[in-house]
Length: 392
Ligand SMILES: Cc1ncc(COP(=O)(O)O)c(C=O)c1O
Image: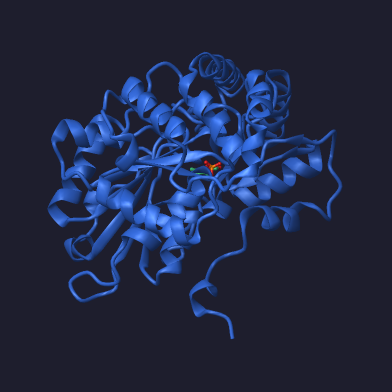
């Protein structure tokens, strides 16, 4: 009665975590370091902007995004990545990147490549919507390890040629969740080149791009433009969730070649749930303002410094380059999460819940993911407890 294609999906990470921890009492005042929900304040003007545009609830919103929003996004892309985009044909407003990442498979991946089911490559560990997008269209997900030995980014070029030939799309996440690795220009150039050779599209999830230590991470779109790659080669996905601390606004965008964007819009016209007009007004202002983003980044930079200090002698600790997670090596992620919860009240996510088993190997098994979203003092306390508990 129900479709087979979702039968193999594992349970979502957070119900799994609740099943692991919730029948044990916390060993101390709970410290939540599991979910990547930004907790810094959003800009104060959001309330006024929303109130000023409240009458917009009277209208059906535009599916592609208001002209003001698309123009604001195009302006941000140009300021941030030095790439000119046509607001009307190369940008699409989304309800957060998650919507776009899922729909990219639906709208852009062909049914067959060289007569066979296409492959969709993705890092392992990864943001789970990539695999669900692939499952929805019956494509083959190929989980490519992103481990310490590969610089925590997937080595797509190392895959056998017969896999690459049948690849229709590749998901890349930079800065990456969970490891906080940044794909360099060279990495992106190599990936885009591989896409040119094997003719696959690159779906580049860049939703953590504004949370970094000192060097702004590059976008696949700017590297593709510099290389003069095929105009449809890359689609990028960005969000206000992390950049502006507005995860509840559900606002993001996709940008790329006009043919890809037209297809994404066509799907959205039929099946999408556009962002309400007053929220589009808030989003337009958020993309036009950098001051709050700089302050937000500063707060994370302070917490990177705390983590570097507290965990300086934690075995295998490598501070993240960007994003807001620590990816900490432990013996066994589930055991460590349970021990931390029952002995200290610190709640973290076992890395295996963000990764897939491939041939009996799960690259996240001996890791925990620790979110640095709480205020600095709480992060410091949580990390001190974590270090003492794991190292004892
Ligand atoms: C890697 C990654 N991509 C995409 C998203 C989706 O974010 P949003 O839909 O809020 O933009 C998240 C959210 O946690 C994420 O970690």
